[in-house]
Image (cartoon, rainbow, N blue to C red; front, side):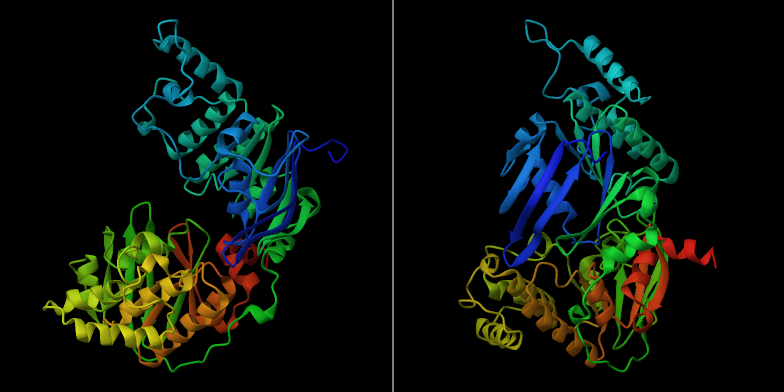
Amino acid sequence: MNERKPILHVTNITKTFGDTVALRNVNFNLYSGEVHCLVGENGAGKSTLIKLLSGAETPDGGIISVFGRDYTLLHPDWAMSLGIATIYQDVELIESLNVADNIFLGHEFRNRLGVINFRKQFEAARELMDRVKISIPERAIVEGLSPAQKQMLQIVKALHIQAKVMIMDEPTSSLGRDETKALMKLTKELTRHDIGVIYISHYLDEVFEIGDRVTVLKDGEVVSTYDVKTVNMDTVATAMVGRKPSLFFQREKVDIGEVVLEVKNVTKKGVVDNVSFEVRKGEIFGIGGIVGAGRTELMRILFGVDEYDSGSILLNGRMLTSRTPRDAIDSGFSMIMEERKALSLFDIRPIKENISIVHNERERVLIKHKDENRLVNGLLQRLSIVSSGLEQPAGYLSGGNQQKSVLARWLLTDAQVYIFDEPTKGVDIGAKEQIYSFMIELIKRGKAIIMVSSDMPELISMSDSIGVMRGGKMVAVLNAEEVTEKKLLDYFLGLESMKEGTT
């Protein structure tokens, strides 16, 4: 394989977003007819790399070589014309159309009068699917297909544009065991047609089943590239988490009191399954897991955004029945959501309104602007929020100051349970430490915190206990003082059960 020239070669690719370096001098290549797997923790840079290859993002530096020709950037249409197709985990199909219509959408078979020749489309769709041994009916309406069939249909669409590089981003994240096997079989079938596959997955068992090579990304850099036949899972997992101890935050420990929140057997079909845990006063209960494990979905249930099918949620021993976000707030919950710009901030409204909105709503009285200004000014100083004044639109703040503004909003509610979903995502080191200090201040006051995080050093150093989510279930609750990154990753990936089975 190494004697051949790669069909795709990335040289010293770099990409930054503000102060965050997403990729630094990354080198990666792909050969015709191979499956080259790309692995790494959440935030390692995998998604950024495939966005650069698909033309969705522009690199700051480096070269992308496709079939021997060099490019400094790609556009989406350009990438597809070169034979690069990306299959994202979120299916992008028109549900109300049939299979053949989806395959040829925008490239329909038409006669001289512009009328679509449906018979010819059905025949061509069948021929394409037969080529890679897919048995989906070409006339079936897409909304009636299974998740695996929809993923396969996206692959067929890529074959229609004669893709020679297929990027598959977490293709099995929402599939069952049998569906996963079918999709992996199809992936190997693609390589028999000289298609090179970049396969991104958190599931190392998949990597070792279908991969020819595997590249490990960590903190935006390539750690190593291995031939799958010459390496084991433990070596790859260790490469994924190797990190300097200095990246761990040293937090103050706080006495933990009685149980505040009890979650018992909470289930929402297809989302979370029979989840139970407790959180105590003065405790930070961390929740970790790979993308798609059900972490955020569970938080949305706790905060009343989404309903659940069965189970119970108790606050201070009292069962919570009516569940909406307003009910949750009135009961004593607050939630700092991961997607702050989409779900938490009113970008064009002043900082003052963004911070005081929940407090003013709960008070249900006429707003006294003098009191409001005093409250908000005090929080700006207390949290070191840098702004041009109370009237500055929140959307013009830096990422760290936006996050601290959301925290300030909930500080005014004096909640009992604070849910932090990815609290330091996209913020600089200085803002991180201020947010951590804010969290410690809360638990010293007897508050309970649930913290969802993809950052393992953050999860280990800030948590008292860590609940591990996998496949919608909470598979373990670990003592943060006794866990290592390697052990945590084993639980995330399901490797701990394999190791226990061999002891």
